[in-house]
Length: 225
Image (cartoon, rainbow, N blue to C red):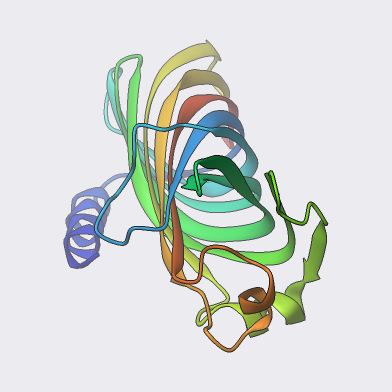
C-alpha cells in the first residue's frame, strides 16, 4: 500500500504541468473465483465459482501526446462475489458456499501507451447481504440469508480490502469516446470469522475467507473535451 501511495505521488507531480480533462468510465467484469480458508495462500488452483461486477469510474485524464496518456480514477462498484470451498469429510465430498453482494469504493490509476492500458489499484468492499449454504451427504442443506447487521456480527471486520490490476486494449472511436476490453485479476484479502458470531452455529469453516479472481472486462470511457 505504501508503494501505491508513492506511485500516485509521482504521477501527480508529473501531471501537474499538463492540462487535465474529466473522464467517466463504465466497466463490466465476469471472472472465475478461487476461494481459500488458508491465510498463507493467495489463491489455489481450484477455481470453483464465478464472480461478476460493475463499476462507475469518474476521474481525471491527462493526454501527453498521441500515444501516451494516464488517468486517475475512482472505482465505485457493485460486486457479486461467490466463495465455494470443497472439503472431504469422512470420505464424502462437501461444498460450502458463500455469496456476497457488496458496494466497493477504491482508486484505480491507469497508464495508457498507444492502444494498451495498464491499471492497478485497490479499496474496500462493503457487503450488505450474504447467502450461505452447504451441500453434502449427511449435512443440512438449509440456506441462510444474512443482512448487513448479521455480517457485522459474523466477521471480525465487516469490510473486505481488495487489490485489482488489469490490462486492456483501447479502441478510440472518436476524440471523446473510447472502448476497452481486456483481462483483470482481483484479490480479496482474508476476513476473519468471529468465533462468537452467527456463523459458528452452522458453518464448517471457522477461520477466514479470501479469494483470487481472474476474468474478462469490457468498458466505455467518455472524455469532457
